Length: 374
Image (tube, rainbow, N blue to C red; front, side, top):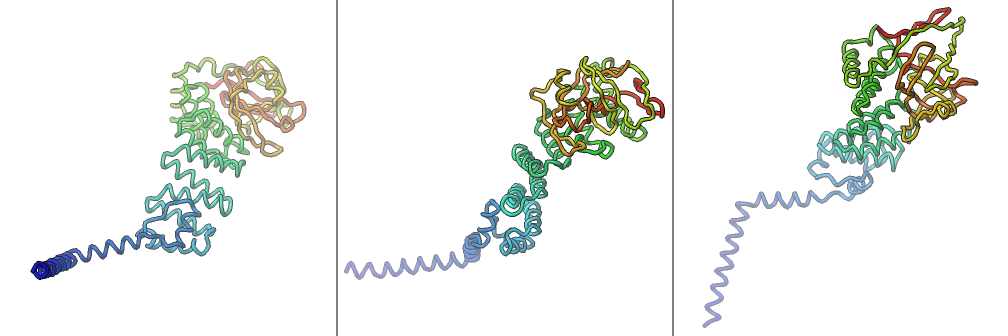
């Protein structure tokens, strides 16, 4: 009796459950199938996993990886994983899809694992900078400069990153390197000089901030002596009251018709023989003269400069007092060369624009004149 009663009930329940499942599938079947398809699609292709692993990025969602042009670039990398054109386009598309950090990581991995590439590192540092990840950006910038230490653009890029990271003292050193690597400061953009001035101003060294602006003006007074440049000088001068001690005096010196002008220059009370060099961005002195003149070198930035013998290391410092005849200036940007031979025999240094730009300087066939700016 009991068994005969239970069997019809179980059959009824089974039919009811099957009917419920049928109704549910009828109503939600498309969604269930879609979810199952999506779950299957989210499993990355093993061939793509090898690409992601090589370039040290997380697997992309299949909806991104499976759509052109991304799918095309991934297929190119699947076939040739060190194809620069494919990798570069891949990194561009990653950025376009919002995967900017992944784009930077892929560029770095390419340089590390395929071919050392300064272009890849430059782009990666720029991406990290745009993401305000200055620690990573500066690590890449350091590697970039280690790879190509003679390229001024890479020091400029790092200078801007250091400014954004509020590492102003380090930024000053990089701006000096940009100027030191230039064969002629006239080829430099105004942003180099303004950037250096802004870094000094951020350090509260407003008198020092004037020199880069004066240097920029002196390169081409007719074009560069703008209202903005004068406004910056006026602003910096008022903040530190440096107008009176910045530069003073006038004098004239014989040239004797020579192309190379030698001047007796006193730095911190120590006299030396200097070449007057309007092509030098700043005063440069030999290491032996720096020692005699007691120029401060501790904790100062090491910079890169271009000399007659090629690229050389130097140290950035400040000369407290510089005199030429009856002309005097204080707190003058100076670099100390590690390559004394490059300055020439019996020459202690170069009298460059960090001093000369503070004055009106004219060169004639018989003499050269230096006068306080009006």
